[in-house]
Length: 248
Image (cartoon, rainbow, N blue to C red; front, top):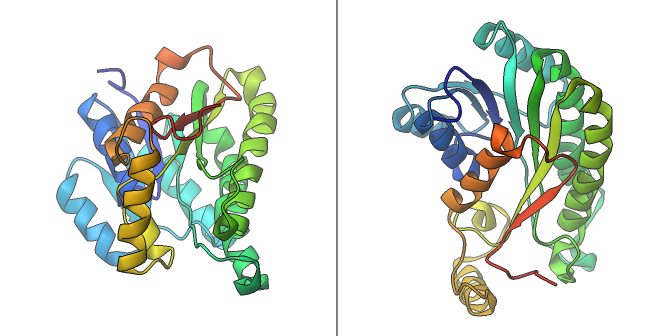
């Protein structure tokens, strides 16, 4: 029960890794405010997690940040113990298929959103709390179709280190959890067709030393570790959860 009497925010918390993390936080005694953009996912999350407070929020819209801060203050008047800034997007296109919109979409949601949220939410996070960002196992790799997505997540890795220095005087830790290929709707939303997705999953599962794709719960376990006091001396770090696929 590491999160008893603790309040946490999970953006993008209505599906996939975010939902699994919210579920784990609640199972360990925590109170959770989760955000999502899809009405369908929001309703599914409310049914799955009746204990959570779930609100609609578009992380890519800077104008919506003020409303998020207000919701956080209502949810946790004494402050948040942790914030998992998990909302993100990933589309897979090679160089000849990208355009300015592709850059804006990825960097607005994957980089600008968590930075502006960290700025706005900083006063609402308790001293000694934790901020967690979502990275990607594609960073450092050479997938041609991950060009823009991996670049945005590389920026997240660097941003976390700078934020770790920024928040260290208050004892607030900032880390990154970087999933590998995980069984969520991520790749479907990213534009992969069903045949391409099946082929991709089979290829990755064969290459992963542990012999399978990840589950959202695999990532949630590491996310909750980084949000908990078990990681009290961990900051500015990136934890990969990819079954060993990218180990040196």
